Length: 476
Image 1 (tube, one colour):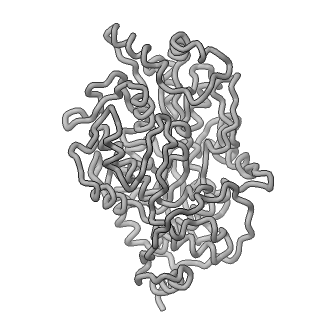
Image 2 (image 1 turned 90 degrees about the vertical axis):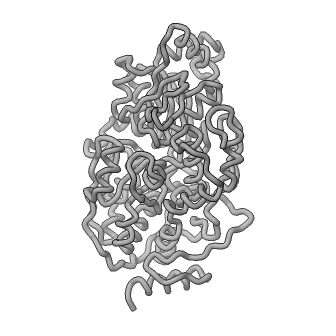
Image 3 (image 1 turned 45 degrees about the horizontal axis):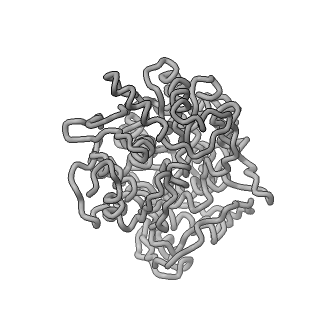
């Protein structure tokens, strides 16, 4: 029996609901009314014996950007999870998100740590056109919004409640609005950085600003910079350059992943005012992306890679009996290496071990600042893809209104839970993960949530209703 048929038969036995034949057979999943949204703690588990796949390609090159949320790729390599699958993986830093995506499309890289919006944007043709898919979400949360010391002092003048060593959180952009207006009155605009036009960072800083009535600008067919009607101008800055660009005064704030918010605190040049956990609790951040053509040509290799990444995510979130993360300090040391993130261990350790400094006087426990496995974090949710599509439409990157069915169809073109579930089923059988850690009976949509900084409810099954609820941006 060839490998494709053997895998399909195994999946049929395990899931018990019948699978179509083929190496990446899609298992029919029946939605349920509700389910527990993932274990809150991830205890250690004894592994078993790896079932080796008949790999089409066993020497791979993966790209990443120097951010702590590249951790699953780094850990899969350094802890031997790739090797356990028979894979020899080279992990290569990329200078920026565009180059990373271009290298995946050109075949210079087999896959990469990607912004969640990149596969969606490429597939629908915003920017570079290519069919990119993901079968693995790398993490939840992990970003922050930092403002310069000068802007923070002006926000404190507007709202004296902020003028304390430990102000109440979350901090909305309400106190920033009069500062923005004062800039406009002088014929200037506040300049803020984000990492890429289709990054979570772009959508998060826009969401934060708009929730307080500050217009972050619109994309149009003639304005690819997204500055039409903007009261605050957003521009692209590579993540490692954010602190230096802020210190030079070229921007007055930014939204970026770690360790570059904590670096601003360490250097004394800025104040993180909010994290994306407060903008949207447990939001998807990065994914592992490959071209659809690569996945089609290398189905067993794709499964093997997904297996290794799931194990890496689990390792990163393992806890002891008291719920303490047991592997994060080791992960921070690995990430601090110059060939990976290349920031100081102590800076990386802050957020990776469950703490976050808003100021040197304001260290807070944030155990969910970085989530790599619990809450079903690694599952590729259709509803995540739909959310990014709503934001692309809200801010004009999608230039025309689309019917509701289009949002769901596009999400399913990119997000591939069928691959994930086959990989996960193998890991359960091998003893590396527990049955309860995977949402087997999900229809791919998370429950509706209002855990946003403005309290609005997002239901991934109703994208048009969600768009219609915003005051700023396209509403259809």
